[in-house]
Image (tube, rainbow, N blue to C red; front, side, top):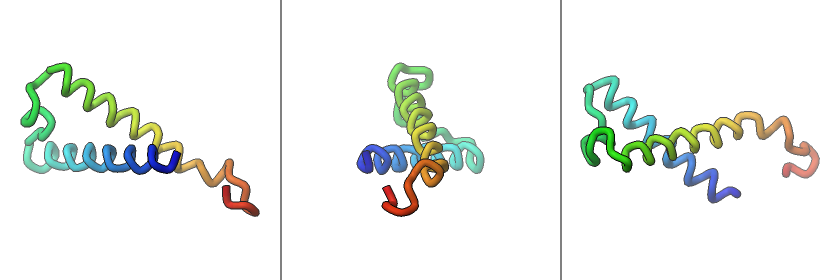
Length: 71
């Protein structure tokens, strides 16, 4: 499961960089690499959204983990 979290973290960082490019330079890297409103861009945005949800679960990981065994 740790590998899934790392992959999701990388995709979330890529998404954050893309949003930074949009905010600062009005440049969307995903639509520059792939066509606007194509199936590929929708898949990429969907994957990044799912990864963001998975990463948000890490915020609450300390609540469910056992403090003695650190699992």
